[in-house]
Image 1 (cartoon, rainbow, N blue to C red):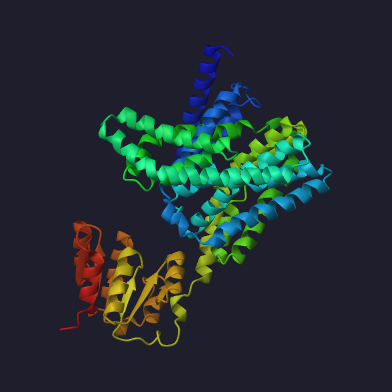
Image 2: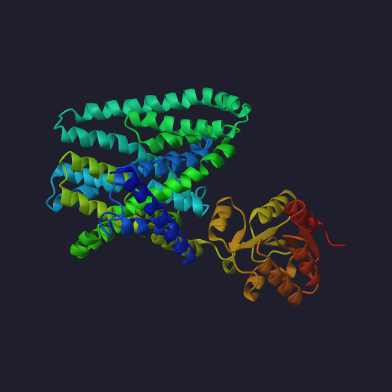
Length: 539
């Protein structure tokens, strides 16, 4: 390929990315879908505008590398240590059970045992790039589902090295598979220990010296060196580049330079990750899909449903809630980018035939394409399940339904939780009402009297015995709803003490005008002041 034609293809990729993402943003769809569709359209199996995929694949892999580095920046080693062991065991069980079952199913279709095993364990791995991108964009990395998904994805990434060793051993007709796998595992442990040990000693000192030079270009260059250097080290021993970048991110997260480092790599990560999603789209073979549509669609549905069901069952065994289990199962049901690596290696070793390999690649790519839609559906299903699981205010336990001289807290976010703590310290009885099922379940696990309900409804007000309450604390974040609640309470109960949280001075003035007894703006410690006025006995 000449230099001019190579540059022309790069320009085509960039134009397709800009146009597709802009269109999908306008349609309020996930930009990941835009990248995938753009890749499918310009790729070698459709319009054929881009043929030289080797360089673009290499750049795209760097997108995943930078994504894992930024995830590592948000997860210092101390936070990894407190992750429950059962979640990591869940990841190991998921890979082995899913891989084994899919291998058996593929073998039953007439595929040889070696090829079936590689396909089974290859598609058992989920997409680290897509899932972590979705979780990061939606602020879900620190949720119960996000932490579980992250742990499982890390376990899956660790499996890639041994699986690649197995592929090459099978291709070489080697009888020493177990010793090779053991050697690979030992190399991994030594490499990870060395990176974490030496990195913790050197990294802070090196970046202190670089920062002292006050040269932004040198700081950026050092950041790139750490990311890529660690990735190359882990790849050299059979792990992935991305996993090495994740380790580097974890190390940087423990330094005072983490925020500046994140800012330096943000432009690289966004563009290169977009290229990764486009290369996934380029793997989609429309003609193959049209010629074998029933078979391929059946395989896509079977893979998504089978992986989701296995994950849901394993998550329940690991003591996750049913809502979180469903959300996790749907989120990780797709095949992943490492399936392309494993299947590609198996095709190069003539273990998997070209037609079978291309079919598997198309199936995996389509499951990845469906992931943003499925993730949204999974979240909605999880929310609905949580609403059915949470205790409602209409069914208060005995002893709480006849409270008097108590404080009612509307909203159990940051401010509401602060108010509740002050109530407990002052031995003042209280009930909290919220509309977020996950918040309520977490509070109930701590033994707090927090229930699901809408305090703008008359039957809810009756259930919390508002007539006998000492006060109502409106600690909601939503301006419109807080104004609505204060207005209703003041209309029905003219003498009730209503203490409200205000987002700003304008909001405070509105609350005072419609009858709030006390208004505290967020310019002061809101929860503490609301608690003090609520605890104060009547004059």
